[in-house]
Image (tube, rainbow, N blue to C red; front, side):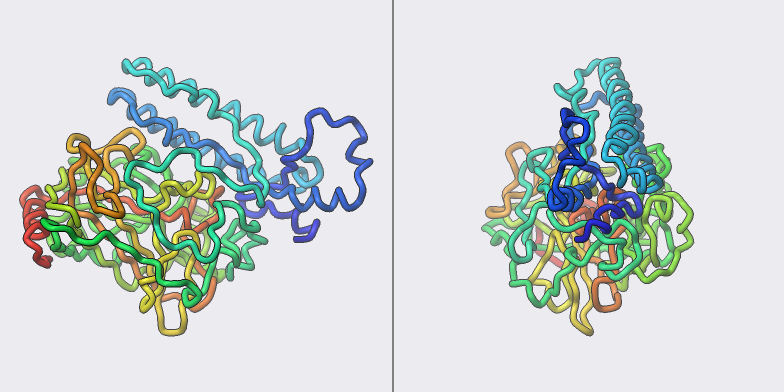
Length: 486
């Protein structure tokens, strides 16, 4: 990477020319005394992404009376980060000339805003009779991270999280690769990623799929629901699970199949009464995921809209060629019906900065699905299609349809035995398989928060169960009998 490119790698809101190594006690004139070689090396290491602690993952327990206000504040924190990245993009020259500009004009004000929001979160929790998590006040500061500085996970994996296969070659920590250079290395003209290092030829990956063997008493059946491929063109940048009541809570566009009433403001009653794209009218569930875009220079209708171009998500939205939604059994025993309105998020939309503890997307190609990738997009050979898939959490705590951090009420089964953690019950496991016909080569990416740079490790899926209770009982019975039902 040249000094010139390092100074200009601000493009589109994901990166900034930040000297994260500058000393606060450096004597005046010290910079002028560096050798040319030292200056070159420093400039090459100045490019960094802003890394903010994910407050949502630190809130496993929020009183019911505070859930609404706290969700609103968490969405405001995401908006603050997005706005900070836009300021970086608008002031790239100043950031390149003066490393202190980023700290004084971007990171400092961002810390102040985050501190105020964290104070309101703590007060909301206290008013509802709860206690804010210890140390939450210390999550206000964001840092500049050099492109070659590894990211450590900000939280431990959730209980039962499987080690997903798919690291091609030597595993690399999130953020360890070179930052995108204007988007052109990824085959598109998206200014904040991805880059060439985010793609790998699927033929170079060794088979790596391992599953727990079925034990005596396993539930071996499946139930498949057919809900189309979003032919209706239902898109929005909302996230009713994480940011209910907040427009553009996701800062990226979602594809929806199933329930057609889903947006940020949809209540359970709205979902229960909503129309559905599913063939079985008893399934009004909501299934959604970030759209996949071709980076071919073509503008979509959302080029000037929230979630689209305003949030650095550009390019032609690609409709899947097929979507398969299957509910599987448990290799260690029988399943119980899911409770209605159970909410599950799998994967982590912020895995590039959070670390990959909760990452759970798999990427592959038709004809090569015994080879799965977590942190790379696949380059498929001629005649093969791109496949992205999600295996959702399949263990439920038996009491809650959601949790404050949207994770602790569900868990993954043990990858070796298939057993659920103590106190959890096995439920039908949703498996989403989404297939795309895209031109060969590195010319596509999923939508993401701007600072996540469209990395494949940030891919994620969302589900709200709105099966009729009677149909859900049929689903569980079919799976427990070992039948294949639709």
